[in-house]
Image 1 (cartoon, one colour):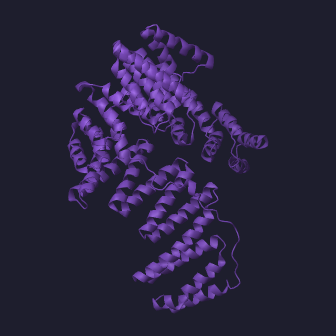
Image 2 (cartoon, rainbow, N blue to C red):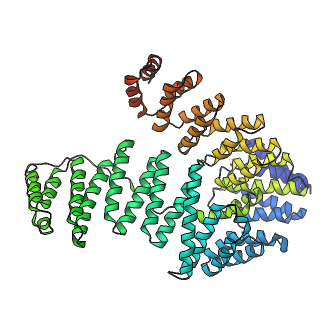
Image 3 (cartoon, rainbow, N blue to C red):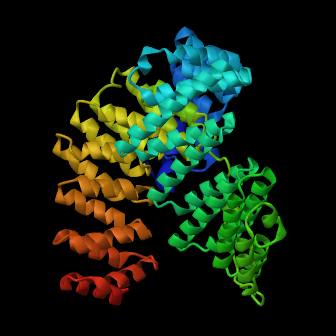
Length: 608
């Protein structure tokens, strides 16, 4: 990322201002372009440079470049005026979208042959019928024939738009059933291919489908699959967020048996991960099992169902040391209510006898902390059914992606500035007919990496398909800034690229990508690669994640591998700053049959 010290920035600013005063506009443009590459400076100074540069572009007749700057500054009237004529309709549509003039944006996007953008704008305008017409037309678009994920999203959007127009619409129901079938198949394909983050997106859409259709089965499928994927990725707090959300929705729908089971699953998960919330979850499970038993009795269900619910509650209360409640529930099982419902005198008498053993029972005074409210993010899911289709329609065009960021204040200013630099770089190259040259594309890939945004991945993936190896190398190098699981899909391809330097760039990117979500893709690369250097680098990155899962992986490697990989594992374990890994090392040191490995484990314990 471009940086300059205070003195050089002040000097360059003075030089640029002097050039403008002398009428040397082309030279002043170059100076100001160098200044706006300093995306870290304070707002007022940066905005002054942009206003000066926009004025220069206007005087030079480069109205579009001035328009990009006005869009960043939210000078909407000036931005709109900078994009005249039929050839600039899509730019005016973008201005209207940033202004939240949804109907105008939708109309202009339709004229620009961007149906996804138009449909999303109609949705945001509340014009669901117009949106449905576009979605239905898009469902038969030949471009989607080989894109099952995008097909699923379109069918989902058709169903949701029709349902917004008419509740219980048969056409809406048909479209939503089709989307569910597509999503389930696509999710399975993604998981088979190891792209679990894409499968996760499918499951999140099933959650949305379940909420909107009020089909509990869809909700359950979506939540349980999301929880499974998050568990596999070792994201324990996200797992509990999803448990909390699912439990809340289950209680709202009076699905008490499911809620009780989910409380217990959350308790077991907390205990396995060493989190302090298991006691509270067990206590909540006990209360919900009691409510479930009452529900069964009130509904006239078989008495055995109510009996089993109370026995489950007793088990939960026992696990948290609340023996007074244990006694009360055994008395309830032996009482007249259960006798009247046909439980049987023999069983009831036995339960009363068991209750007598708890007559002087106490309640454990142990604290049972709850999962903190600030970690609960109920229903906080992105509208990926729009976002991923918008990405598909842009087709990885770097300028379009940069422009989608420039005016969007949801992005930090530094990211919007870098998006503007991407757009202006490509615009400058286009004036010289150099936008397709490898040297230009190399520069753009570096700028895309500096966006540090998920939106940069699609254009980088497209650039990686370039025939010139130098462009592919640059695209892979840019991944070192992009801490997303999706980055690894391109790295896996680059690790077996025909070009040696592309493969080297992939190894270098692999060296820098270590974050909690990265554990599974890194471990997959380690297992699948036959290149010793790749395996070594992947192992080092796994060690830097600092999680229990990464510690266990390193221990497994230490015990099973020899030579350099064992040494890398020992070094990474020695550098780990996670107290939960030490007991695991101690346990393995006591059972390890290989004397060399046992000695290494004991040395690690001594060092730690």
